[in-house]
Length: 473
Image 1: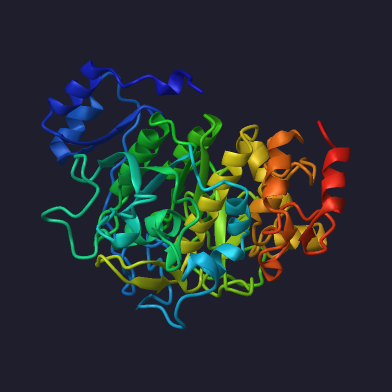
Image 2: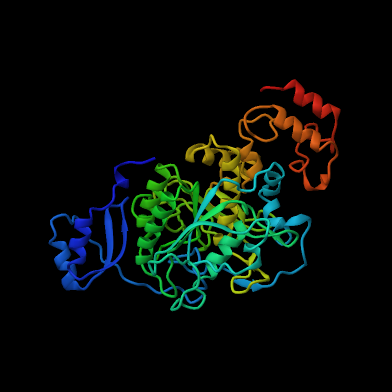
């Protein structure tokens, strides 16, 4: 979708601002705004320009002492909460997913893979700190990392990897996020959307936190949308310079940009934050842009689906439900951020968010008919808590619960429509016949025995008869 907000800023106006001596930082066509570094005298000159309606002066702030990487916490505080652990305990998990098995099983990603959805044809945008792409999981022969486009908004160049002058750890957080979606080492670490293409935006500055990062975020989101991305995910957030009353869906700069992005049809996901929660539904700890109207705001649970103690709660200042959905955010497996081999366990809503984003990409791949609104409804109405209770968490902590990629994709689809294309036809018959016989591993759940309509752990004549009786539907 294109509207008047997509019109570029007139070059003559940009030139007039820079003629004052101000240094260009970023610009936003959506907000009709320019971000610059300027002295007081230069700011006074800019204010006198006839086309300047409003000016904001931004100041830096310091992160919390526990900061590591660029987390999704208050003012970008520790996105790992309990931190990062080198290595993975317990060896390689079951199936071909290795260390990533449990976190993907929890949200039914393997069931989507079994139906042929691995992210093919999908474009996922990521806003983060930078991306170190030396790890073996990004260089497999079968599914190497596919980067469609990238831009470093901090250094204003096309390299989102490690650059001379980058602070130590600048790239770590973004590398973890990318790894949860793009890793591919069969038997060791297979991620959710390894066949997708990625647009990478380096927008987060270490070690200090400053509102200027929001300007980079907005520019990065516009860049992702301009590349034709299907969805954008960020495990970033901002709160130090906002009061709780400002988390109203219309105030924060990044929130306003996300609102525009979703109105253009770009699916957006963001971390709720790691500020903790309480039993008081009148208070909230979410961070911007988690308060945006149609952003999918992601909280964190453990392997059993129990809410993580650090996961931020809602509602928004105007009373809307946030966070809306959950995935695992405790000891999430991803690639080692500083080495070519090895894997790490990281905790935070920073990690639950890309798990949900990768699963969402598979849902969109299966359901080309879904837009922002219908996708949100499908994810929410099939999430664990809503399925169980028919309602959402009154404390604004869990939202609708843990997502199910498979059930979301099956929304308004017949069970016999195995490939979820809206018709029961020869393609579904071929899948059934290729799976004929006992289920390969019924203990993994019915999602893997994808043509076992009567749940008897066998694909046989009864299942064939049911498919044929529904033919063409």
